Every structure is written in structure tokens, then in C-alpha cells.
Length: 178
Image 1: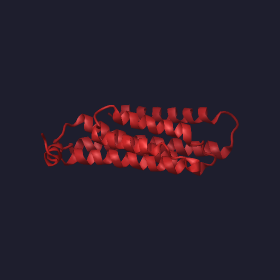
Image 2: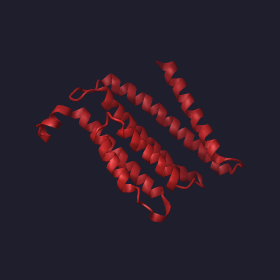
Image 3: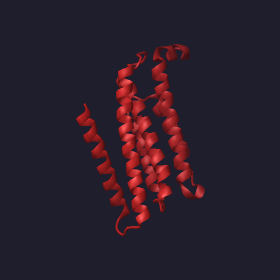
Image 4: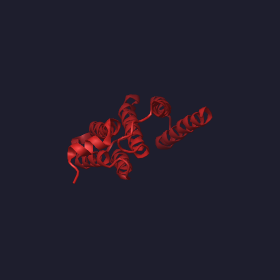
């Protein structure tokens, strides 16, 4: 039987930091979700907290994807559509935190326990994550412009189109720079 100390020693500093990043990003996303949900109906919070702990405990499994899907479902069911441009700040923050959680879990799946993450890999992942983060922020800014314009039509379709355009632009840029 492995003791807790032996387990931590076998994980390595980088992997423990990645697990901690998954946990903190999951909990922070839960906080943003709670802040955005009106009426104080926070029955979903314990499930999101437990899922964040489980994702940090087993980041190389499907649990992190389930946590991200749970967050998306809770936003879909409990958080109203933003009525003002400032209302997109919480969803954009949650999207950025989910990106951080996803990248940390992916890194745990790529590098085995006890291995230091190479500096060049960290820089490449940081560059790619920065591009996706810029895409998230550009999409939020464009969404804020759509909300401010009070354009008639289906806002959900407009936001979906903006997200697809932003992600396609980021992926095109990433593919051309490699």
C-alpha cells in the first residue's frame, strides 16, 4: 500500500501543480456559475464541487469532460441570457476557466507522473491557449456588440455563429503557424 507521502513524491511537482490548477479552475468556475445564477437556487453547487475534486483526482480520465459538461448544462439551465454587454463578463470568465481546466487535464494525460514538463512544451501550450483565450474574448466582445445593438432575431444563433467564426479563425491561425 502506497502512503500519501509516497504518492505525492511519485507524482512530481509539475503534475501536482496541474492537478491543483484543475481543482482551482473547477471551483472558480463553480463560483462564477453561482454568481450568475439568479434567485439563490444553488442546489447544483455540491455536484460541481464534487466533480471538480474528482477531476483533480483523476485528470487523465473522462471525469474532467463530465465536469465541463456539467458546467455547460448548469449555465444552460439556470443562468439567464445576458441582457447587457456587461452580462457577458461572467460567461467569458467561466469559458476561460474551463479552458485552463481542460489544458491542465490534457497536460496530465500527455506527461506521465514524475516527469518534468519541458519548457518548450509549456511555451507551445501557452501560445495555443493564449490564442484560444483571445478567441473567447473576441467572441465575448462581438457578443457584447450584438447585445448593445439590440438587433432583432435569434440571439442564440448569433452567438453560436460568432463562436464558430472565432474558433475557426484561431484554428486556422494555429494550423498556419506550425
